Length: 163
Image (tube, rainbow, N blue to C red; front, top):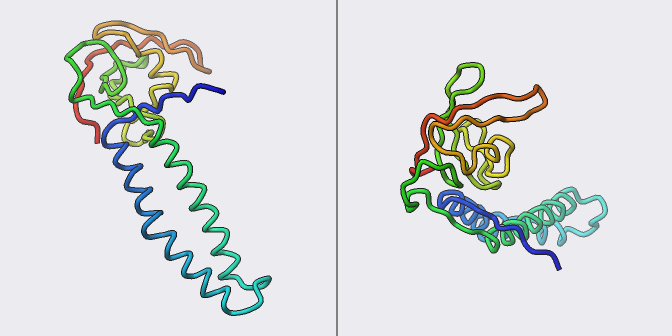
């Protein structure tokens, strides 16, 4: 038996998964079941597009429902606003960095189900987050990537709401 990896997640991320699960179970799946039942009543199913598509879509929905249920069961909700004040980088922190090329970047360290690079949300297991974790404000860390090593200075560490 393998140990389940903890699914660290922010309150906003947890609510988003819950909302998606609710929508699938209470709205989308019942609509597809209705379509499949209607299509099945039309006779020959072998060439019935509504029936075949509906069954395929229902399998996709059921697979996503199982996935979301497992993710929520393994979830460990960590609220950055409730964290004790510290200048050290942990899950849920919002970190302002000075990159090797001189540019400033702010990243939010979130759970794997919440990644959104367009909004600077990075997973706590991503290479950048892993090199930042446990470092402190003012520290320099080295990110080793395909292009080589990059020195990154941590300018600020905050524990604020992550939307």
